[in-house]
Length: 126
Image (cartoon, rainbow, N blue to C red):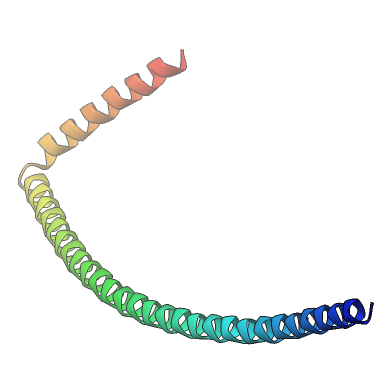
């Protein structure tokens, strides 16, 4: 019986030793996993910062490109406006000259256009 008690005690000691070893190994593994997680987090943060820097750079390039398109469109718009203004001025001078050359004919034409427009507008009301 003494040998049985001694064997049981030895088994209990072995089990306790195994439990303690498992606790130690678990703690060590937990520490290793935390370290790996911290390393992975550092890498992810570095990659995110790098991606953010690239995006900022690309957005600045796009902003400059858009600014160039805007400036080009503004210049072209101003050119078209100036050209239209010149044509209107020419048309106004032409009409003024023709009216001054032939005042009676111009008055008759204006009267005729007014009558036609009046008839057209009056016809819509009926």
